[in-house]
Image: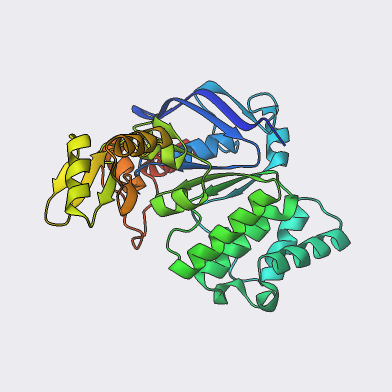
Length: 332
């Protein structure tokens, strides 16, 4: 499949005098993982709520699954599935009963609903726990049940809002495998996360949201090249070869004791070829060559001015969610 699963132009949203989204543009290709990064309060959850028809934007044009969000919201809802930050699982009933409840909400015939529930529970490795109350499930199992419930309507576009927050490392990796299988089957996933490793592992495209605007967008490698500090490290065992290379690569940082050179580089193929060509011209060769580029933590810090959230911490809900909930409560 080709084309865009989600396209947003000039997306704006404010709550009172707080501007949450300020002219956001998004383009999510079909059958890919698009990760939306940003610190708390950046607007990630509000963006998901708007794209999934839960909140109306103040301005902007949005199409989801080829349907205009403003004129055909029901068609958008039929094409999507949403797994929010907080579990939608009812702990008082079993996994199967949670699934059948979703099947009823999708108006599936009983026989089809039971078949779909059983297939999805098996797909998410929950068959053995299907008849247990969901309150007895681990955090990872509840998250998998959340995903299974989202898949009941066979959505082609899925929004996952911080799906692995609070999970242990094994459960996080299990969730990554589930996401990869979904995309392999042609599903489009828009993922919000504060785990930079997660975005690096999963995303085809990453957008960094900061103060309601997109600070940068691209592949993980493209974003890493935005941050200075990348270099090619050359190690030598022959002092004569080391001196010849240092003479050819005058911009390199030298370590005369370790016989290593660090040549500034953006990590691109062109930059690496330039280094190798200059070594060839000098008639010398390194014993070891490694390319070092900044990681997504460096990118996050450079673009947002905030340190990245450590992987072991549990991130709190976005402040824009709190503002939205307060406004909705006042409206009641």
